[in-house]
Length: 466
Image (tube, rainbow, N blue to C red; front, side, top):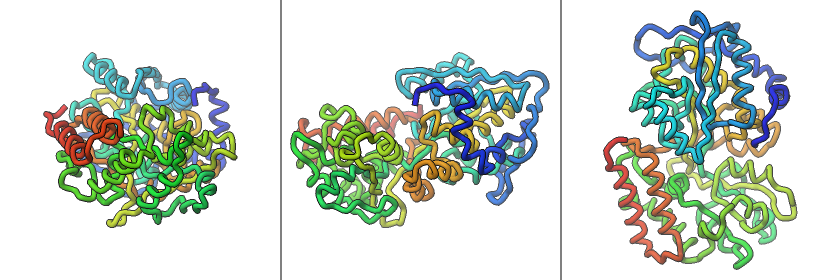
């Protein structure tokens, strides 16, 4: 949402959390001074949080000024509310909010690298793992580990789903706290009106029983020439990963050094499944044919959108005409290794490694990731922040659709990142060559398209580190 809100309205939106006592439990504790150099130590999982301790001003003497650079939430009022409530409890801290307003997320990362080079990057920033900038920022000494601060503060990391805490780790250390997060492109977002018309029973939205062959059959049966498409798939990195994982394969290896497409028969089977639908059967739209798949789903011009939990939530929320659309979902089938075909995707809030105010910056990122902050990040900032069990439970009270997402949030498979931190080049290669391969107008034989996609992904993985 883009409408700016007042602090009063935001707190009203968070009222259900306050009523359960979660807001009080997540008030930030006193800012701790940086610990003396020692081996980093994360708190044991059974430790009780120190969140109920009285909040005081940070320990640093005199006024402290933090700069917050982000493209997450500007214009919604969420950022300002988080600043106001933190400063009320920490009156000798001033926070300068500097929204990044680039044309794209990647443009904003470019700005942050330039700011760092100029010595003007904020104390609090976000180099998201799922945009593949997290590891690059660590390797370039832009963001620093938080282990000592977490240990000194006794921060309870079990406040968040384990998968999203693991996403903050690199080289045995933790470099952030979770911001947004979901299980990736793990879901068939389905217009149930079309299933009912075809006499098809909707799948269990939390089950894994529907096969990929069944989804393909539905896509063909629901397709109506010049009227609607049976299914839409965006052939980007996130979809390619879950596509190959749905067939018990993967796109690249866990070390991020090798494309698996020419060796992994399961991955090839997944790509062949999509190729048949897109190129041979022509029941999938080309990008030029459908600029806005979400709108087509709402308008009854698309039956199934391969997406994720965010798409499901937004589809259900935006339905205006129940005669045209009814929301349901089908998860991808469970893999033979008993893991759901998924790709845990998420963001992070980080502290600038060279910041002179490490303790205060850490307390602020705790404040924006606590229960109130994460709930507001969903309801006010319009983000998909399914990273905390307590917040997901509050979202379920507002819309039961959120309960469908829990199994994959708890058990999803992590993303594999290029070892050389060439994330942008990697994702660009995926979407460019897969989209070309899956375009019936290009008339590329499957074997050639597969080889081209493999070669161009491997070319990126073989580059020198970024």
